[in-house]
Amino acid sequence: MSFKSIIRELREMKDGIGNTSKRGVDGKHWRNRTRSHIAPDIAPFEPIEQGRWANLPPELLLDIIQRVEESEVSWPARTVVVFCAAVCKSWRDITKEIVKTPEESGRLTFPISLKQPGPRDSPLQCYIRRDRATSVYHLYFGLMPSEDESHKLLLAAKKIRRPTSTDFVISLVAGDFSRASNTYVGKLRSNFLGTKFTMYDSQPPTAAAAVQPVSHSSRRFNSNQVSPRVPACNYTIGTVSYELNVLRTRGPRRMRCIMQYIPISSIQEGGTAPTPTSFPKSLDKKISISPALKGTEPISDTSSLISQDPLILKNKAPRWHEQLQCWCLNFKGRVTVASVKNFQLVAAVDPSHNVSALEQEKVILQFGKIGKDIFTMDYRYPLSACQAFAICLSSFDTKPACE
Image 1 (tube, helix red, strand yellow):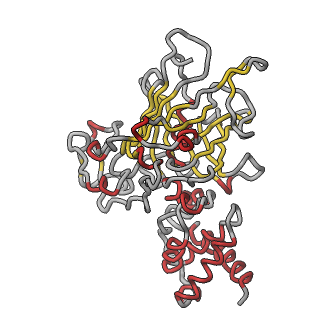
Image 2 (cartoon, one colour):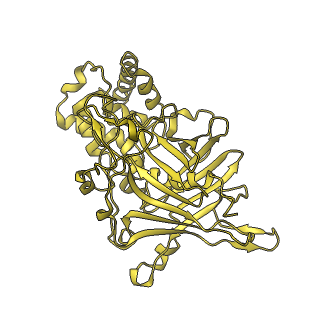
Image 3 (cartoon, one colour):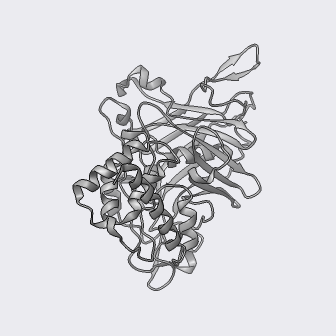
């Protein structure tokens, strides 16, 4: 059988898998999740019948998936790699073994790729579309908007205003922002003035954090309520702070990000950043929060695991352009509209950190406006897509004390 016929059969199997999943209990969420073209880490609730492809010899299967992975490097063609992972367990295991992390390959394939550091050499280019009517923000993979955006949705966030703060709830799909859903990724929460934001993740930032017990004072469980999909807790992974502009002087916002679990050594030669390999499994038993604590968020204490020398990011200082009479940064064509929200983040390092001048000048995250309610977001190692998205969301909140 030729390679092209194999690809054609995989596409046909994809259609069959989609039809089967529609009959499942959570068919609605399954269909929404597949629109992102990133394979989910959990199988649909209704078993899929395994056909002749499940019994291929491992050597032949390895060769087929390797050829598919090498030939389909960009979206939407890369959906074929996702179809391979959706055939059956043996195909999925080999696909996950072959597909490399974004740091190694520069590609996004599985949902966990969104929580892994980006590539070191060149940034991954994405864009954000803001829906003012629903206060929802969509993160897409690609250089700029196209006619069909549903095929490359990566993440979505919903802005929720509260009396003393603002929350941005981040999800893998655009239609479900419940913390009880298995599509919940994390959230961003601001203080009253909108000058400081705390980033939360739905899973431990490091493997060691997974064994840290949740404080009984922050959460009490009853034995028989609520879906078992409720995440155990939120983990604080970093903060974003904006400098107060007390004198109301003109100029760009000044921001500072502390990534608590990414060490400064990650940008040194030979350094590494935390790289999760899978999403946390659903809880085995049904749990619920006591009525007295409803509306509060259980937060795990992982302070002992915080890096003693965390990575700190600062916005790159713009220069004043006399002819244009405005502050300017070189976005290399990725930003076309002047906005107070535009920024570039670089590492804030001390001479004792022994970080090269080239690394100090390297832009780790840049964000800027290209049209009405459309913004570009380019990120690279050691940030992940989720972390970069959370930092960019902080720019959308009102900051009267900083401007």
